Image 1 (cartoon, one colour):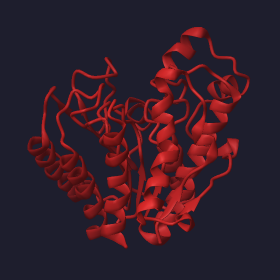
Image 2 (image 1 turned 180 degrees about the vertical axis):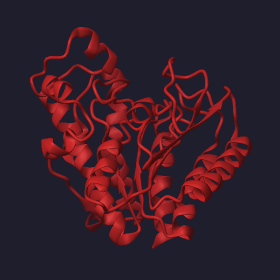
Image 3 (image 1 turned 120 degrees about the vertical axis):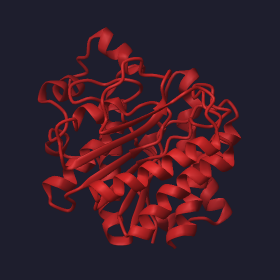
Length: 300
C-alpha cells in the first residue's frame, strides 16, 4: 500500500510571491484523490519530530537559534522566508514525515512525502527556503537505528543539493548524487559524491541518457540498500527558475527511471517533492502528480 505523508501545517502562509508553491501541497493530494490515483487511506499525518533526531544532523547552536527565533537578519535573508514558530514547526513535521515514510518504504517498498526535499539546509544554517534537511535527518535516522547501511540520495531538483552534500561529505555510508544546472543556484556549489552539472537548455534525451548511465554505475559500485529521491520538477521547460528544457513527458520518464530502478532491484525508496516554480500552475501540479501516478503504476 502506498503511504504518503501530508499535514495541514504544510500550508504555512507566505508572502504573495511564494504563495502558489505552498498551495500545491493541498492541490496535489486533492487532485490524486479526485482522479482515483489514491484514496484518503493512503495519506498519513506526521507529528513533530523529537529534537534528539534533529541533532543527529544539525548543530545544537543552530537548533537553539531556530527554537528561539534568534537568527540574524543575514541568516534570515539567506533562508528567504520570514522566520516564525509556524515555519520552524512546519519543517520539524516535514522531517518526521520523511522518517515515517522511510519506515513505510521498508514495509511496502516505497513511500512519499508531499513536501520535503529541503536540500539547501546545512548542518549549521539554512538557505534557499530550507531550514532543516529532512532527507539528511531521515538518512541519519536509518543509519542510527541500523535499518539501512548504504544509502543513496538521488537529487534531481534543478538546484544542487548543496546542504545535503556538505552534511555527508565525510560519510562513507551515504552516497550523494546530484544532477543540476551548472549556472543555477547556488552560485557556490558543494562537492557531492557525484555531481552532473547541466548546461542551460538541456532537454529530454541528453538528461535521460545521463541519468540512466550514472544511476546504473552508482548501483554497481556503491550497492545501496535504501534510496531517497528528491524529485523537484523545476527541470521543466516552463519553470521560471530552471533553465532546462525537459518536457512534461521527459520529467515523467525521469521519475520512471528512478522508480523502476528501485523496484527492479528491490531497494526501498522514499520520494520527496522538492521544488517547482512554473508560472503555469497546471504544469506544476501535473508534473508532481505524475510522480505519484508512476509510483502506483510501478509498485502497486
